[in-house]
Length: 359
Image 1 (cartoon, one colour):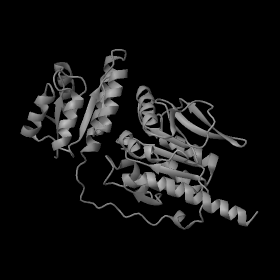
Image 2: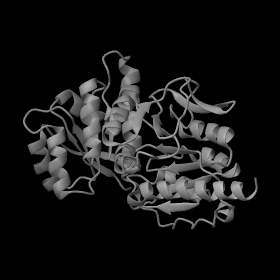
Image 3: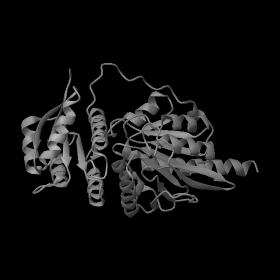
């Protein structure tokens, strides 16, 4: 049996033992070794050649962020999961780590949570992410997608861009959201799988980088051109049409695909509200959240594009859309920003020209 060898880096002996015990519960994962700080981590990586590293954020000497930077100088493909506290500082440092090359993160158990439930949450979250980042090679080739029927449809005006992402999403969003011009003519709505504190900090970070205004979604907020709204953690975000206006809605309905916010919820709502005038983008992320919503958008006549496998941290979400033959096109991360601008501007121009020709 193939086993995933994990190096645990944490200055807390309690945390090292906790993770070792969690790995022992799964036959596909084995503890390759431990380290108590960043300097030791670099030595142990050279010695042990692990498949993946879990990295504590706050450690004496070389902390997790500094260690990550050094790891990425040498081992740029080695998956690294940050193990951080659910605090303002922990969330801020974790977001910084994600932008510097961390593959994903898991939050430590909180003293406010019931001990057994908190540990089980960490176990499920961490093991799922380890297996997603270190998949067992499959001898079966991925089936090639059939050409999407929508690729030959007459162009529709694009009135909204809806984006869904998970693992690797903060880095992906940071790569192309700042490229959108200040006169971007439509609103952008985003679901990024993250807890509440993290989504607020992500919105603040992107707002500093982007010429467009980026905020967490608010109940009843009217959508306007050039605004970017990120679904707040632990709330589904929807778009509803009210007369000639479109407004955001938030709710705490049950999770879908084990997620809240869920991409499917947002995509389904924009398909219902905007019909064919939607451009959906599915970025890097594990699982299949977004596929059913992409089907709704596709069925309504909207457009669906996805990030390619080579530039994705995990090709679960975009790969699922491709496997379902719902992707109109596949693009590397570096081309998505320009493609959004091109599609929105061209399709709006074509649609306006058609309306002028048939008043």
